[in-house]
Every structure is written in C-alpha cells, then in structure tokens.
Amino acid sequence: MQRATFVVLVLCLSCGMAVARPLSQDSLHTSQAKTAPAGKAAKAAAATQAKKAQQPINAEPVAPEQPKWPNMKPSDSCKPFDPTAYQHPNVDSLCAKLNSMSDEQLLIMHGEAPLPSATGGFPLRGCTHRCLLGNSAAALVARQAQNNMGWAGKCFNWDFNTTTGVPTGLINMFGPNYDNSSLPDSQRIPASRRANADVYYIPQSRSDGKPAWRFDHGGAEKIWDPIRQMWLIVNGFNDEMREVRPGLLMGRIFIKAGPDSVEEVPIMFALMQACTADGTFPTTPEARATPLLGHV
Ligand SMILES: *[C@@H]1O[C@H](CO)[C@@H](O)[C@H](O)[C@H]1NC(C)=O
Ligand SMILES: *[C@@H]1O[C@H](CO)[C@@H](O)[C@H](O)[C@H]1NC(C)=O
Image 1 (cartoon, protein in one colour):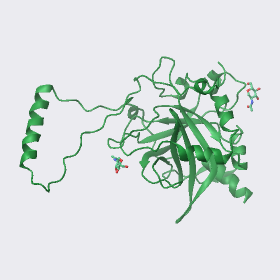
Image 2 (cartoon, rainbow, N blue to C red):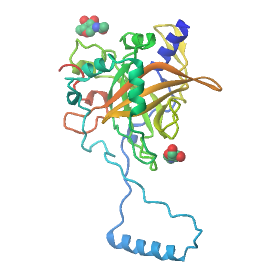
Image 3 (cartoon, helix red, strand yellow):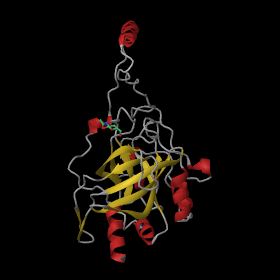
C-alpha cells in the first residue's frame, strides 16, 4: 500500500511526460475571425432576417453568435493573481497558508467554488505558478523538492475551443530550483517544458458530478525515471479544476486504475495566473515576473 501510494505520487507529478505530440510554438498565437465591414454586415443581417421569415416553425434553430472571451492573445493586458490581497507577501506564503488547512477544508474550498459554465471560457492564460497541496503522506512527500522533479506549474496554449472558450492544451514546466525558497525568484523560475495534457470543460466531474475543467494526461506514454530506476505509468491522470478565488485554480487528481476503476490521488494543487514584467501574459517560464514567488 505504501509503495502503491508512492508510485502513484511519483506518477502524478510527472503526469503526461514524454508525450508524442509537443505543443508547437505557433500554437501560442491564434488568429481571430475578422469582422465583416459594416455595410456587408447589415446586408448579411437583412438576408438572415429574410431567411428566418421563410423558415417553417419547426426549422433547426439558428446557431447563436460565437461568444467572445477576454485575453485571447499573449500581448493582452495580464492581471496577476495577487497574494497580497489575502495578506500574503508572495506565492510561497500563500501556499504555506493553504497547506495549514486540512484536506477536508481544501476539498470544501474546491466544492464551494463557482462552477464553470459550458461557454464561459477559462480563467488562466499562458504560464502560471503553483502550490502542491494536501496533508496526506503522499502530499507531504510530493512537496519535497527532491520528489517532485521540480514541477514548476503549467503553461496554457493559445488555441481555444470556439464553443467553450477553453484553451485546448497545456504543457507542464520543470525546474530543479522551483521549491528552493532560499534562492531569489530569478533562479527559481527557469524551467523546461514537457508533459502535455488536453484541457476541456466537463459538465460532470468525478468529484461531485458538477461542472469543472479537466486536464487530461490520457495520451501520455510511460517514462523511465533514472533516479528511482523504474518506469512511470503516466497515462490516465485527470485533474479536475475549479476557480476557488479570482485567478486561483484548485485541482483534485484522479487516475484510471483499471478499465472500470478511477481512484483519487490524495494530493491537490493550485495554479495562479502569472504575468510578465510589462503586464502581458508569460509564454515562457522565465517570463513570470509577478506575483513574487519568494523574494527577488
Ligand atoms: C469544444 O468543446 C465542446 C464541448 O466540450 C466539444 O463538444 C467540441 O468537440 C470541442 N470542439 C473541438 C474543436 O474540440
Ligand atoms: C537551495 O539553494 C542553496 C543555494 O544555492 C543551496 O545551497 C541548497 O543546497 C539548495 N537546497 C536544495 C534543497 O536544493
């Protein structure tokens, strides 16, 4: 059992590594649909009206106009998650606060968060900061830098599902110094990017049957961990995310343990919006300037 927990822990932290389909850099930019000039638009609207008038009463409903979401480009204005709004000077301090809470309290926070809607978009853009949360034995082990492979948060891509407004994918960041709070931020934030996952809205979560966002590492291949000399089965991890505070997402982690069985991993995590020094969205780990991780 102990060993099983440990293996699961290690797996979770390397979720989705070594996948076959890396996110391309050009997917960081998305082309916006061009709006028709006013004259054309008016003509089109009139044509639609005329068509509507001819439609029989039982015709298919006309598709609603695409919803638009803010912050669809990396160069848009970025508002970082602000730990000082919660009386914490930096991310480390806020994570410590979350880790002073019991697992029950964290689960309640996740359960009481506002529910995502099917067309409401997604709150995070580009690269984020993270906390590893929970008080289970597995979570305590995971928080030790030597065990989490320097997992340093996630970067979301800039391709969006045009129905849900949710980015289609993410890539995890790994930096050996991320948890070393004796170092200045400039030495903690550099990280490599590996381990992709699909991102999407789900109407029914595993945790409570209500909507959430899922990070699906289902396409991942197993990887060799040279330190522990063992294979990590990373396929099958699903995170279920809710926005517990503006710009702060909290996730519960599930793993497909068999064809018909899914188990929750007793570790949670949080992601926070980070921004660049000039107030845009970070597209690389190093570009994360705010909020402060520890000290500069
Ligand atoms: C967008 O999301 C909806 C709802 O989850 C899904 O049905 C649809 O297949 C997605 N579209 C694309 C292009 O992935
Ligand atoms: C953190 O960084 C300091 C300064 O470089 C170093 O001495 C220490 O060994 C590091 N700690 C860990 C756990 O890597």
